[in-house]
Image (cartoon, rainbow, N blue to C red; front, top):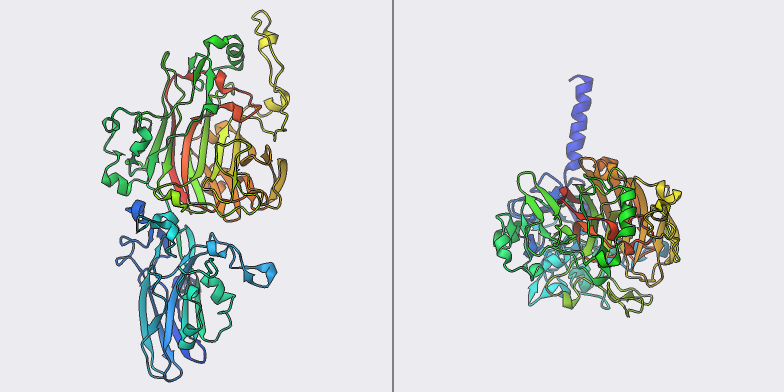
Length: 637
């Protein structure tokens, strides 16, 4: 064999052996030897994709029967007794390693981390099966043990996820990312002294779950010779990618004002059993309260394609009388399947804000929402959402939003999806309540946002400076109505604001919780985080970006990287060219830990929510034509 060919052959051998789950080394103690451990003996690929079929009712199962024939990971190992009359036992555990808290606190001499119980870990899904016994064998004789397990939702079988006697495993779905597997071999003496809450992970110790990884790797079981711990740190890696072409499921409760929603159903948008079992997306219907009301100029225009100049904007802003303005709330779809479309040919979703007509005035929000919740993950969206600025850099009134929101569902009244307790004064009780709202220990509401619109770049003060002088509607004096924006705003004339927000419900627990503008540094950048007051429920950062780059190209990527202790917002022209535009951690804001859904919208914000915006929604015309956006891909990993 030639030297170069030999090196290639050697590398291939190393690659194959490094990807194999079999541990060929013999592991031994005074009682037994373990060898030929294989955590994944019936599957060669360590990458497992989430199978969405039927997951809406049963939750995700890893693996599905379509991925591995029997629907389980097969485990095998050999055991050789080294002493007579010994009974041995074993148990398998797994844990998500990508999105977890460390099992112990580094600064406290390996003391149990107070949030390690929140990690996603499990064993056999029947938690009443504790350690399984290994048949007795003579000294020196090997016995082969074969077993199987799978990863399911609600692996501790917690009561909060049950509803009407059913275990709704979808209420605590498996997390994406890398999983470890941990095999424990125990002597009979070890079993007798093992706490019940480690043998059975559904049990608690002083009303708290105890992470078995902590117990065996760092706690009481770590140095106990009765146990042998075999850890596979990268057992499998998982990711999710909802098929956007599998249809749209219609929640009829969202269309109570529709005379007959069934009249609008299509073969790919309805509430049939087939669509319910396979569709990963539903049409999203915004909640619109009276604070969003618009008093809009009575003008219809295609702002992007026909043009709407700064001078025209100022003219109409000045010369329409109050009596002529149209008082409306932003609308939502009255009938299903009319403004969102699932395209099975190319697996995309199309959004269409409908046009307006004289006498039928409307600025209608449009969007989609995923149907399967996750806790944590790197959410990446590839999309071509509508442009926001025209050639004169006037805004069309749309906010492109990509956001996560807490998941509801049957049994919500039992609190299955509450955030962890806020131990300092509590959360504001409601999303819509005012500054004098009650404070409570726990809430369900959580939200993480990209909101991309035309607003000012800077971090505002409580007393907001005007962007232009007051004017008088004097047609004979252009200087009086055709006001100019200040240079500090015009500097970003062709840019839009990428606003990154975490709704922490004003929990004061983070050590650096504050109001006004706060600097926070990450990865060589400094971000300015803003909160209006200490009862304000959200904290926001802004990044200015060119509208043509984000929404004038064929597509762009947007990523929310939601981790247990931080959130990172990224954007970029390609998935491998993302850059950070926002960062927050648990020192400055409360990071949500409940299960959330992804929403993508094109919506009409009332700019009173964004003080100082150079263009007011009231003075943007109603849309003359449909405003279209396309979603190409969603991945969660």
